[in-house]
Image (cartoon, rainbow, N blue to C red; front, side):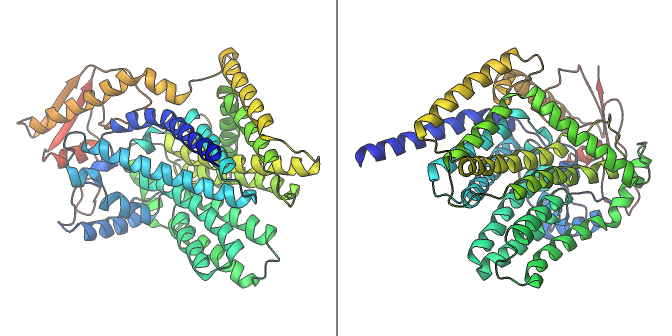
Length: 499
């Protein structure tokens, strides 16, 4: 018994150390966050000193005039909890706040993933569930860094927080199907409606619900009306966001700024989205070859977690299509609303939602596929064989990454390599903000020599060699970054010149 307890304690410490090694570089990069772009527009008062009233008026104005994919819930959170408003960018207050938020959302998302894995594996093995969750985390945090989500406050409620809700709600759907408890039914609706207020998560939530409730558990005793109610409310929540007049006003504002924004081209944007989703998948497989071996490790773990009942191969195949349909649904509104072409530059945060959906979705499918193999071919893998297999896969991943000419950086390692540049970039922008704040002039001009770009920092976003001028009519309650920084520091205008 004592030996078993020692092994369990050692395993937990090993897992903790692995998570620290994986995530501590991210914490370092997030610590050097700074307020940027919309943080300033959302961090100053436009309608008075009452923050709650400010938040609801901001929600209403944006819905009517400057909306997007984020949804009304995200806007409320962006305003009420904006660290720029609360701490006035004193010292490293912004970065400390962002680290706390990053860790809270990351830990919450991983707990949600583990919960989903535990319920969907249909096998009680906490250690295997922990290992599978870590493998998913390894995929997510080794491949890409999303600086306009991790380092940008305005990106947090709209993207990472809504992704957390999405993962939690998938777990809620599974839990209700198992318990049939009234409280689980209510939570499945409430969290699902919040999730679907963000357009990027609508297809993922709806497709998961359709497959799990209407196909996998069609004969579970609930009436078709009861099954349809949550899905109907999810759809209504998404429609509320789609129908916002601000979506169309935003196009007009962007045309005002000189962007080539066309009227919505639904079919063309759909084709562009399909091509970009496929291209992203191919690029990831080519540049991050280790994730293919991690997915294989998850399949092997599924073979070890042999359930009593064989998973349906048809549902697994359908789930693969649902994952990529969900990736399409995450990217399509952005492509449509911004008139993006295949070779256009895409914001990092759009890939955040797509990647998380694909990585998490395929990981769970891989686990269930491994379980299908175990029963279909009567495979009974022992723990020692799993350990040996994982050692072999690790060696192959290291060697394959070294010899593959298309391999790109393992993100935590690359963050460590660029630690000095991350810090330098932060103080570069911090020095600019200090000069603006302390300038005796109302119209401030700042001159700097440009520094190297760093993918692990999200800069303030001041327009170079010009003023990001929005219309200044009485009815306009928003502004560009230069104007937002000027309002924050009580200046008339700010111009930045980088040489």
